[in-house]
Amino acid sequence: MSSLALPPLVVLGPTASGKSDVAMAYAGATASTELLAVDAMQVYRRMDIGTAKPSVGDQLAVRHHGLDLADPSEDFTVAEFVAHAHEALADMTARGVRPVLVAGTGLYLRAITDPMDIPGQWPEVRASLEARADTEGPDALHAQLVGLDPLAASRMEPTNTRRVVRALEVTLGSGRPFSSFGPGLAHYPPVRFVQVGLRWERPVLAERIAHRVHLMMQRGLLREVAALLEEPGGLSRTAQQALGYKELIAHVRGECSLDEAVDTIIVRTRQFAVRQERWFRRDPRIRWVHIEHDPVAEVLPVLLSTTTS
Image (cartoon, rainbow, N blue to C red):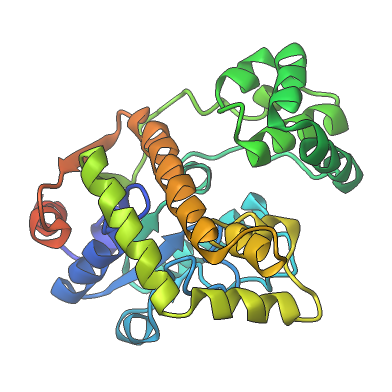
């Protein structure tokens, strides 16, 4: 079967699950394969260590899409990412290349696999909501969303400030409930994408996350954050919310010690991984592989089977 006839492949899972290593192994074992990173923070240039962006060597070995699309001073939207992703997918298909999507950001993935009516933006409304989030906390905004759009509120964690703010921005700015845009994330119609998920026992994944955070620090994450803060444009509000960056920015500004910042990164990254897993687990179209020890050895055969099945 030619790569042109093969459906796009998605390798997904929570942070530190090993999905990037699995995707690289698949690309190395097959012909005419390129990778599309589906990650809300890897789109930012010079945010490399903290986002676990593929290394220069990996990018030279296998062509990657979806990386370095915006400066850290910019707010990059899901609509902009989807436009880039569809262009990249069309280009790969035209060249007979099989796309492999490496996905950690669930909303970005769904916006690619399932067409959505993506609402516009209302910057002034968003700025007001973000200011309220800083002073009142996300729970207050979520309570407001419950009153305006209970369906949308039921689909997100009250502590997920970014999603709650976005839902309220759209609801208040457009005059339409956020949940009225598109068929909704609770619907899972058939799609042409083959999706394979990596699942670890949570205590094991928690240890992998801690190890990766310490490795990022050894590789110079603090220097990376300090350099970004010194850039003329600084970091946009979106970029500042990236795990690892937000906590180290607080340290650089003297708000906490380095050890406290690192401990907070680990805790928040573990919490984020749980939210990622919950998001993906709702999708019945995903084939899950439970990992015991080695994600490449245990998942690669499953991926290779999609080439011959």
